[in-house]
Image (cartoon, rainbow, N blue to C red; front, side):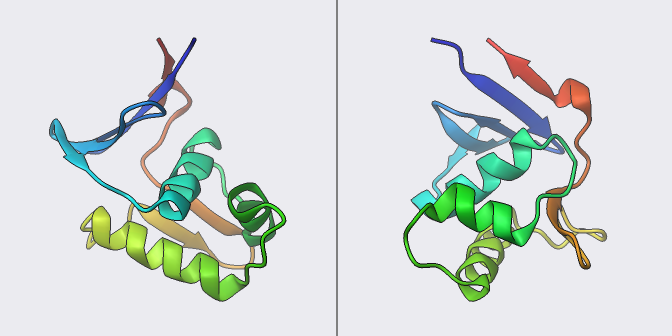
Length: 108
């Protein structure tokens, strides 16, 4: 079975293995991992809050606050103090992972 992998900055994400930084595994809660995976699949394009909630939480009750908390947790995991941040809020549009390019996605 094919597995997509992504590179952004010093991070790598593999759909099977998860998130690593410089080869070191970084554990993520399932919803946070889902948000990251959804953003990475968009390859640098913004993903609306509604689309993220639908993709990650499905039919389970979730709010914008649930998404905000997941993004905040993701930023902590990424030690995201860069300017601009890796996990970017695009005002009025949603979120994206900065520094991604179409070539950042590799299917093994």
